[in-house]
Figure 1 (cartoon, rainbow, N blue to C red):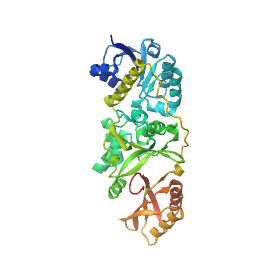
Figure 2 (spheres, rainbow, N blue to C red):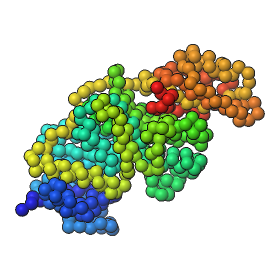
Figure 3 (tube, one colour):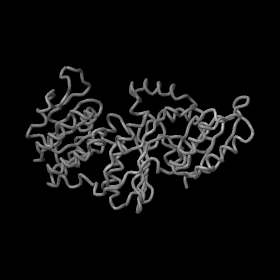
Figure 4 (spheres, rainbow, N blue to C red):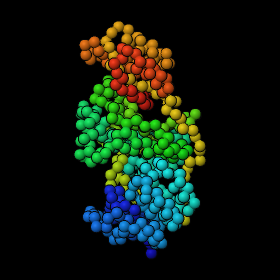
Length: 432
């Protein structure tokens, strides 16, 4: 008779419902792949009386202990989100001798080491594929499929909300606020979109990816973050003129002097694979010393895509239980690499200025930048109003500290009326 493995689910929202749906609709295939009958036994919910779109042969409870202390439950699946009480529940699950699958990026980005240490001490699995990029299997790829590589670079579009907004601005010539409102109406953005549009959601995911890619602990507090609220239709138009597309990019690089981790808008050249990633889709571009360049693409959120990642983890944990080999690849952070300061980042820059349209202004700007060690790859100047001009400067790759020194001098120059925007270039002709 085939073994029955019972699961306790913490949460029955969007992702939890997707997990149950997938387990039911693909039950026969999942049983054959795991060599076990996987059964959801108990589900923790906040309100027992709330109407639900999904039902099944499981017990609903509003008491976490009913799930965490049930001796028949082998795997606890946390899909409730947030830091607490999720953290407390996961730690208790390990104390009770249970394996854990979670989709909680916020918790892992802040407390991943503590959770992984607890899993190791308990001799149990902690799987978290769904914590980054929804249904895209990037965690397993980095931990297993690319384990023979030294990863040097991870570039990602890992927030669907911001990618939807920037895609609409690019393809339809619309303004940021208008597209943001539409994204909220369509359910792609929250009523409070701060975590998405300010880059915080992407920063949490990048901390997880960088920790695994470089085998060194990175937390969300290590990630330099800028959002997309300052991007305008003018910037989008100049990007087109410069054969580029603006994306909110998550960047992680392992260099001789440490790890560089940053999230910010960036000019991505049109011939780069990430430039074609549109709408709410996600993609992660990984460079390894043996495999070369690879890219993982798909839906980064949603009930079934995220549920797909959770179920894949459940199947793997069941296989490990059957083979008596849990806790065999939990924490892989055996390095202690330095985290680089943003002052030491190096890239090319786009700088859009409004200046007085007078003789020698451009020459003076060139001198101010040169004094800080910054040179130009190209210059665009356009008449905007009478006696005013807009200048776009594209620098050669330069250290961030030098660029900031130059900008301080430019701000003090009386002929400069405003600095509209400063945006980095990534992985293109301006970056080589």
